[in-house]
Length: 414
Image (tube, rainbow, N blue to C red; front, side, top):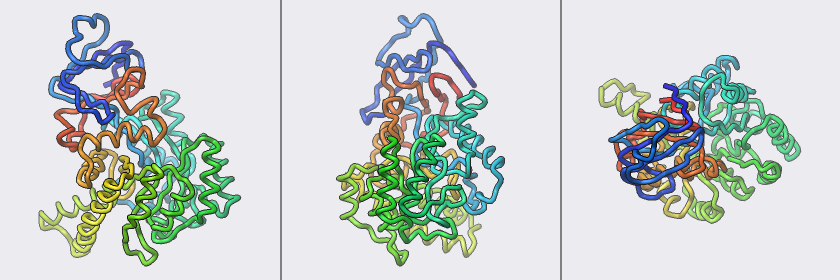
């Protein structure tokens, strides 16, 4: 469905504006062209004469969701990153188109891509901008900066030393990257080491300063604690994963560093569905059906331990005042482009209220991407990016799946 009208009136049972305020009962919202022009409570039907009237009597109107961590090139079916990166650019572009369109249908109207191969996501962005295909608003890093052989090196932006990382930032500015992503530690790329820092403080500081000179935010992939600390001290704007891994590959939560993160106001995207969510659910289901293999059972045992540990770590960070934001890491490993609610539900399990989890995927996510002036809340003058879902997600964020309507910039796509 694709409805375009100069004026649309939406009514529903409730409205959550994304700011963290309690829901509004019996709301109305008016869209004109691509903007929200009025939000209120009560009846407006008699005053609304021209335009389309749409009533969603048992549903909740919320801002279009924002996922701060996606990988558009990836299928989300468990394929290892090294194998995905062996695919041709044309195949990766087709995958990216399919993922972008699926996420828009899921009510996700803004996504930050956290790394793709070569220029594949640039082609996607151009296609959306030129009206050749539909998709969410895109915030692209294009390619993540990484050391030689580092995490995601196949994407095309290896850089070593202060001079090379500065030049790397400038190359990404030339490609009109929306922000800079840096692999401050290793990850699941086979030639990298997630337990060790990749870049030094001096390299990260030079990278951050150069990015900030061009008014670009910096997000740092960081599993190893030393990489977390280097990223924080260098002034990055977001720390991704924040896994607290020691050099010997054991986890050790650092309350002192968490306090520094909170004091700095640095965003953290813990990617819980990627680490302890989706795959764990799949293996539990296999176990319940009696179909789990010995190897899968061993993996499940590890994930069960990680589940309790990661929820406790994120709870500690929340209680310390660290600002959490929703980023599902979808596409990567086993997380498909239909589970933003899974990440939000795990943030609730870690200590956020459902209303706070919704805020983490609306206003907070918009703030973390520096787009809160355009989207993220349902207020007059902002982009008409809207999702409408059956039931009350303030009671259960798992209801944020299968939307009954989705609007991006005032146009209805579901």
